[in-house]
Image (cartoon, rainbow over the protein chains, first blue to last red):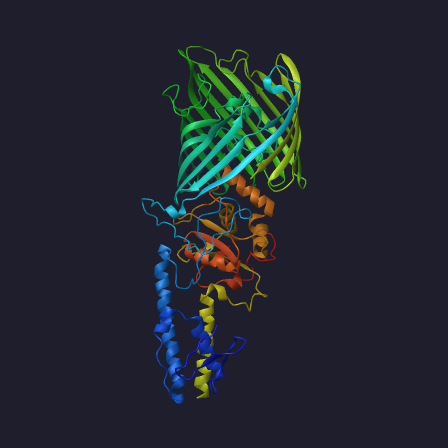
Length: 461
Length: 174
């Protein structure tokens, strides 16, 4: 940088190398310090206030001293202006270069793009009653998940029981910061059925308003907070240790017995509980349909009665990774008039998910009580899954069990008794690709047990 | 005359240092080698003065998403490959880079975590970000701190204090 100031006795010239040299007679140190100070603060407003130095060399130190005092006063003014500007988040005078935009990255730090340079971050909205719509901060972020499988089974009679390659779900996970308090989340899933035809489903679609850590209100289509697995693992096999979900938590269109998805509203948050780490979930929705081929009641409900679910769980600080919880779900099923069934689903879980060690345990009881009948049909189920990571390898074991009564009004004859172990190995080829191989042995009531082997490549992109 | 010059020199040098301290890109480096502490910095309007290590961990893990003034917390990290980031991953997150990625991918997928930490290339960028975003929290080496941000005590200690927890080569806090 070369700045020439000819008025007064301080004069700076540029040498051939571009380095400044001073010709100040005597007083070199003081002059250099003053120059540096002025150079660093050489903003237009400051230079506009410069006054001519006295020509008399004897008066120069006093003038410079006076100049420093003036500049210090000016500096205080700038600091005061900065302090006033801060509450609104305005760019302060001491931030000479533009800074990155504040909306958070869609992906974690290592995969996220760096903040765009040359973009001044918009200040966060003030805490007012109404949220202003900031078009510059609304970002749509997409991450994809999918898998490809090869599986074979000794089970006969089902169209999907032949050994075959199969495409898994292609899941586009879309999120957006609508504003500082509103956020949007959805899963758009492309999936082929047993007829080999691809279809598209909106598996999740939630708009959430976050009041605080203690109260978040959401509306849309969500995964019902029954137990642990259903909200911990959605439509991505890549996150899951095993190749698939426990059959207790299988999706409705894959023979699952639970109301995995629901359309309605929910509130979630923390419960002030210190180191116990209590959280709550309360949901109200349409529940599950049994009249139509589409079990999730996206737009029309079989009945006016709404499904209610309440869950509470603890994540104690003392054992990070541990979660213990309970949930209760209640709905009225009307599979065929005039039959009406009161359904209650009670679930409990205790899981530990450390970085290396994982142990999932869940048990639930589905109680279907047809109105006008004295009998209550109880369908119990549980699974336990344990795994341990050794570098990139994670061997795992799962045992699962579900037992629906033979004449259960909703699940019979498709569910019945199913139980058996699964063994598998997951190998993380990279940060974003996992290969799994799994063997299942499944025993059925009144039928032969069957074997299944599956090879899966799950990935995120 | 010589005494006046000495005063003048002192004042000028002080002014230069003060000025440099207010410029993010010109942070003094003279003590960098000796001071390896990591300062936790927030916006100056943030009322927080002190954080326990547990609170700090919850904030960085995305488990606590709002400040006491109800502003949403925005965590800012340095980009991978940075020694300060490695120290924060080891001491605050207590996980490696791969687990960090997986943690936030999974957290965002479940909807429990709103967003992963913002990643910026340099301490100067972190300071600018924290200056401009009222809910931001980040970290820089203590010698890089300037007056545009507020340094938060961790377990009631400032980075300059002996028993301060977060250091480039610090041990894992209990």
